[in-house]
Length: 140
Image 1 (cartoon, rainbow, N blue to C red):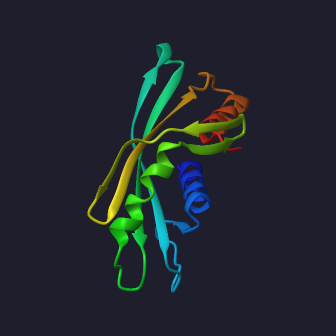
Image 2 (image 1 turned 60 degrees about the vertical axis):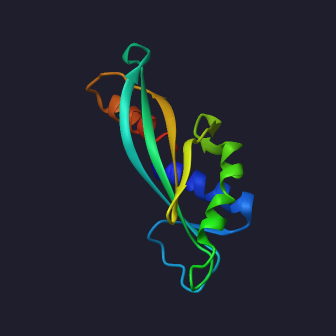
């Protein structure tokens, strides 16, 4: 999840020029500011159990100024950037994540991302365990 959070954060920062941070990061006195939070929404096995499709829910909140005026406008301006896709670097190369169901409600912009990764082989050796962690983290 950290890799997805970082990919979204870096992409929004590059695309908009607005500083973006991981949610719950202190950035006192810096405006405008975007905060990105990610949570896993579920996992489904596909391709006969050879791949796992993870669904992540991403929430972006904005702080346009100290009084928080114009937050909705700042969040609404992110939608066109997101529709181009979010580039993400992985150990196997780069890929583009495509946001689904982009919504601006209240003071949050939310969307979901789906990511398919291979399911590691079922072996009980130490090498298999290391390969499992490498596959699951996909950023090693």
